Image (cartoon, rainbow, N blue to C red; front, side, top):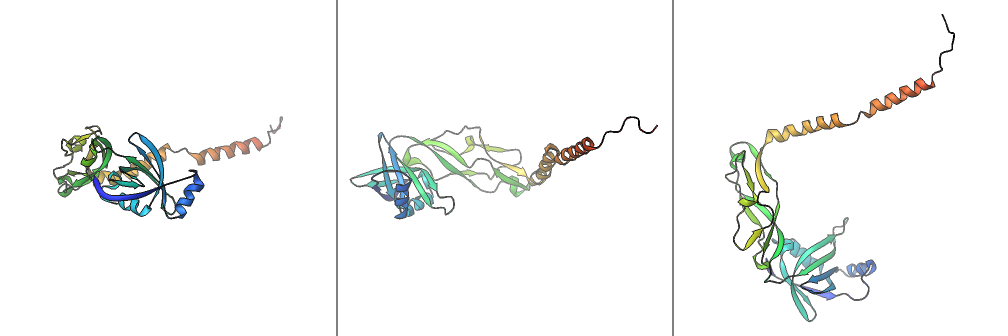
Length: 232
């Protein structure tokens, strides 16, 4: 989805190593790279607040926005981003230039709507097995999500990618027979855990018995051998 967001970027100069990246972050910026559209890659720095706003928007990283550099501007998408594992701060961004007249491949989330009959009247729970689907379409046609109505879903039914609603503006790349959602029994979910524990217990090696056996063998080996010609 094309947004009105405009992100200003400043070209980075000098060496592009870890020390240089730390200096960028020390200024409150995030190091980034812009590439694609048969143009040279450019190292830049951007405001992390703007990037966070885009990542947390309705369309997230599928948002297409303007990246402005001194003397130029390009439509881009965020194709990769990294967080610092402890503090959770953005530490690097990859932007890709987008041609609005050429189809691109993206993954969009699947959101279920309605209450399944199997949940409402049959006492089951909804199990959504597929959360995102890969599609191909023009950049301007990228949806924020794909809604799947599960109202008629009962036990024994499975909704697949082929059941997802779509228009002629997009094409599914995920195999059409891929399961998306079904209704499962709560009883089956509860019973599954003890059965799994029982299987794990049977499969686990009997370490205490091995240790005990080893001690016995050691004790037997250490015991003095009976003297020849003992009691008659």
